[in-house]
Image 1 (cartoon, rainbow, N blue to C red):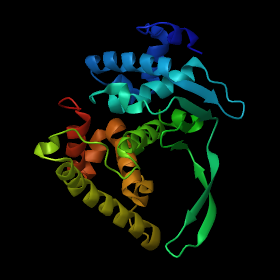
Image 2 (cartoon, rainbow, N blue to C red):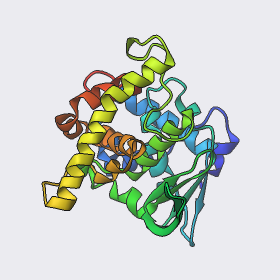
Image 3 (cartoon, helix red, strand yellow):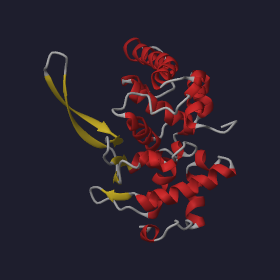
Image 4 (cartoon, rainbow, N blue to C red):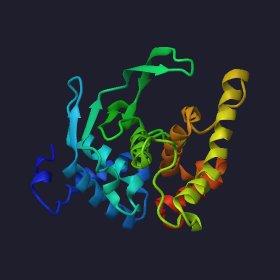
Length: 264
């Protein structure tokens, strides 16, 4: 699988037919400007060269699988200073054929330990591998309207983790939004993100408990600011207009961070 990529530097080009098939399947990629597509392709090739893919439970990693994940994974860092350096804390990507059951253990404020199972489509581990369900990666080709994308979700967590434990605020560049210190930058970030998170959380609670209208943005984001950031990133990159209709300020904040060109 793309074995030749790891033997050559600089990385060679991808077979054009394979690249065009990927853009056709994931339309939110193919509709980007030509300059974006050129950089996206180069970053995807470098990603394939540097990362190692592993299939779980007999799942076979094909060129199609690897490129689909690579092309979506590099989208959030397309315009970030440093590019793929944002992902240099890990190498492995584990792909399951479908969702998996993760066994969780938590301790509450009283010191009581709780154990439970959670069905997950993906998981990003701090300084560790990324796990993805191929079923859900494929679903991203048809869930644009819902703003759903498991690859972007997990790689947004990776970006968030660059400043330590995921908390919904990635490392911010000096002078972000005109601020004079890292503390001011974080405050400016949460001044926009926190109200949006609380609005989603309130709407999710009203829908679940009182039969209110379900939020458009995935209510999974109501779990924590970290999950809200990841869920909002999914929507930002695959259905920006719908996210902007609900959270215009959040889109402006993400534009400032992800450095989206005008009109994107």
